[in-house]
Structure formats: C-alpha cells, structure tokens
Length: 179
Image 1 (cartoon, rainbow, N blue to C red):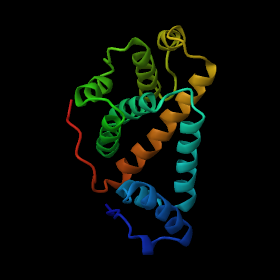
Image 2: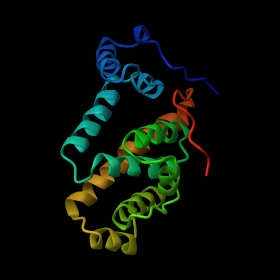
Image 3: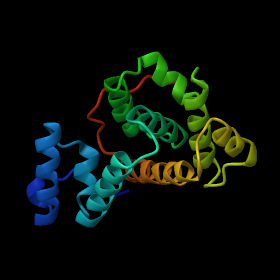
C-alpha cells in the first residue's frame, strides 16, 4: 500500500500554503492532519469554513462541540482526532475523566448527554439516529436548527476521521487514553 506522508508546505499549492500560514499564525504550528488535508486546498478551505461557520453561529457551545467531536471520533475509532480533541476538550474545561465519560456516552449532565447520544447514534447508523434518541434530544431542549447543525458537525468530524483512516499520518498530539 502507498504510504501517505505529511507534506511540507513548499510541496503544496500556493493556495494551500496561504491557508496553512493562517493556521500556523493562529495555532503556533500546523497539525499534521491539516497539512495532509492541504493536498487539496479546496477540501481544507471547505473544512475550515464549515468549522468556522458552525462555531460562530451555532446552537452548541464550544464545550458541546468538543463533546460531539469526541464521541464521533470514538465511533469512527480515529486515534488522531481522539488525541487532538481530548487536548482541545481539556482546554475547554473538561477533565480527562470527563473526556472518557463522553467517549463512553455516559456523561453525567443529562442535556449534554442527549447531544452525545444523538451524535453517537448518527455516526453509528449512517445518519439515521432513531426515534428514541431524537425524542430525548428534543426533550432536553434542543430544536430543529440544533438537529441540523449537529448532523453537520457529525459529518465534518467524520471527514477528518476518514482522512486519518486513509492516511494513517503520525499523531502530533498526546495520545488519548484507550477506553
């Protein structure tokens, strides 16, 4: 099988280099996954635009979005995204135990757990969540707008999970604890 390597910036298109320069300025470094996605400047731009839009105009807080990222990455068994989003979730105030509970879909907060369970069900069932999980989500206080945004967040995280699954690039975050 062909080995996919993490490209150096100068190996990429001018468009990708410009996007990565912005990431490096914002984050202080370029995560391997972003560099790899940059083989396609359009894919990288689309992913970043979607992430930005879904974070600035979202029904979900930053902590809720990280919980969604964790549970979807757990379902998809993405070690890269589990590592990255465990670090980010801890930066948002979750403890390591919290991140493990989220990944098990056993978080103590009922409202957040409704989000986690729905994201898990969508990811597990190729999009079709199931009536009981949807009802629990709506009973927890979420609406149709939140359902559509949650579905978009699951799809977005699945994209990065799938990129890692098909590239197996080196993980450049502390590896998340196995559950």
